[in-house]
Image 1: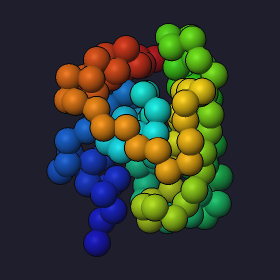
Image 2 (image 1 turned 120 degrees about the vertical axis):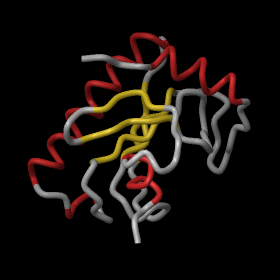
Image 3 (image 1 turned 135 degrees about the vertical axis):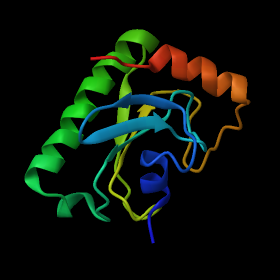
Image 4 (image 1 turned 180 degrees about the vertical axis):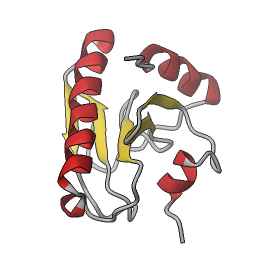
Length: 126
């Protein structure tokens, strides 16, 4: 059975896409901990990040680095990386703009218009 991220990559589930290339895709987390909370995923479905083939791991981390710099520039906030590995069985990295009000377990409830505004702000075109 495909992961929810594979379904997003395949266009079966809609998302607020920020970036896409041959090996990776980035989109807003629909249960964000901070405004701009983004997920970066490899297009290949592998459960654990450390089980990715070296070229896929490198592509993932290259996208993480590139988007972190971009997000910091457009938002003016430091970007925190988080790798949990237990919430969805598909390797991914969370990029979260640093927010002084953040606390563990926090989940923001944003309107569709807020997601669309954040998506427009964060979209990255190489």
